[in-house]
Image (cartoon, rainbow, N blue to C red; front, side, top):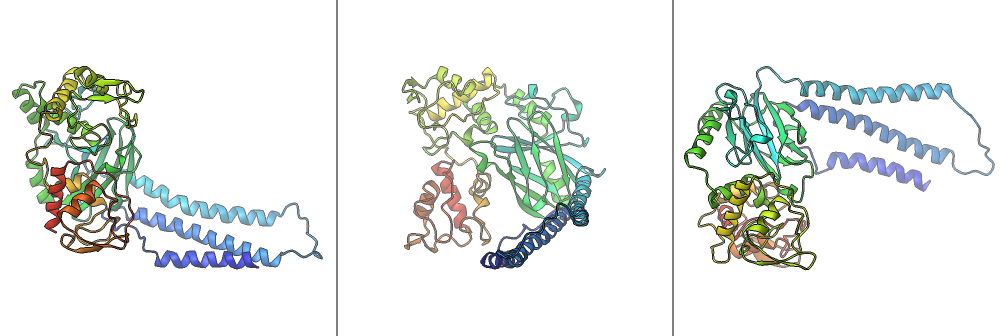
Length: 466
């Protein structure tokens, strides 16, 4: 009897929790409401089966409970029952599969008036390519990828000369315009996912995949990588910004085309310099694990050149040109003690490798200043590009971490029971030692930062404006 009552209570509790649960689907911002409908149909059907099976088990436990005077009736088969079960199960499966097949057919059928935008994934960043006035994307190939051609656009393809290249984590799309997103990866398996758009797609190295959608709301929506792609996976974030058609057209006119970018690089006589190495380190994702502060996933580049490093086997190596080149080309050859052997092999030629080494020598040697004179990005741009706004909202919405709205100057209760006033020193500590003073009601899950102190101060100044 107790088991039967427990089963009934579990079913009732599950139903009640479904309706009072604080976890709801993210508001939709595209045309794919049919995906939500398909999920709802599946939930209803599986919910009915869940209720029916548990109630039947509870009924059977009560009706056929142990009785030493009862004898079991042997019935080798019941064709009528088998037919009913087969028919009902088939109807349920068809009801779940049919809507999904219809929606999938819509997903792979791109409207004729859709514009095409290419999404490129790379550890651990996003970049985007738009067609120019000819509305065609040029051909691309791995062999064309270089420091001045990170997308690998074929320089001899006329269709690619006016392609617009966006080397940051912000995808701009027009409102109410069907968009076909072509997807490719430059290194490992990634997955492009925007929860509000309801569509997601794997990006497999060596192949092209695609999805299409029509944005229906103006605003910003977060891009996530939904496939584990390495130690920096958590930080592979970006943003989609949906603009009005007029604003989108205006934005396009401000972007550089491939031929303009290529001409600029050639006119400046590409040399092995720290500046080109810096650009390459940003494009290749090196700065996601290596930076010029003491908190990095891989060995810090701060004061690195000329330093003696201890390897996992106990040997010591002086950081010079030869060591750095070997570490870039064959990262598993010598592993620094205290760091995991997780660095991917970089597809760089000698010119590019030397450029990065020059950048490390100029910015990371012991006699150089290890900080930029100005942050590369504003505090708001840093907060977005580093993934801060994935957990901290700027409008008061409760996310995984405390909202930044009205945060500065407020008093917060900590999990330790103490109270603390939010000022510059507290925010700086929270960035570089995120679990030192955790605000009550929030989990201690903030990862270590991959920014320097100047960038952290820029983010703090942005928080003050909120």
